[in-house]
Image 1 (tube, rainbow, N blue to C red):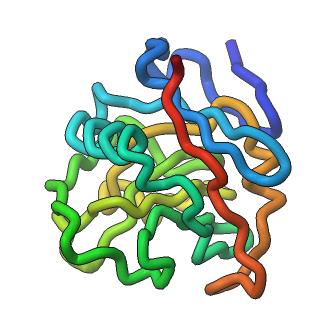
Image 2: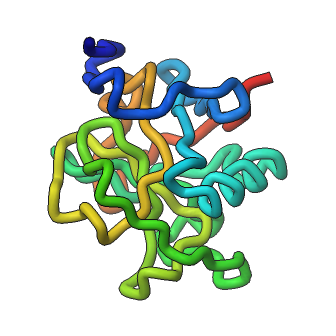
Length: 169
């Protein structure tokens, strides 16, 4: 059985059944993106993401690095891609169970695997070179077409923003 949603294809049995408290929404200019978070895969990362969402950290942040056929990166409070050094770092939670395919959400980091903080990226395409090197913490369940529509560039000339990021109520 396959789950088909907004240009994203996932095997229905590939990911655990989502709980309401693990649904995250990102409003962008063209619509809403629904992300299912995977605490069974990356509990520390999901907890940190939820904390930042609750605090409003992500609201208004830009997609500062958007590479066609690769990924869209966001979540940097400075907007530079270097991140806020005062934010706590998270230990890597790599998994061989899942792969960086279209719609998968992973944590950005420096060369140090244990340096992720607030930045994350959403995959446009399948890139196996990231597998077991970056933490997967979720996947786009609906609205991938809105990620496809954001302005490209490193950084984009007119970067799109996450207007509002919130958890399921």
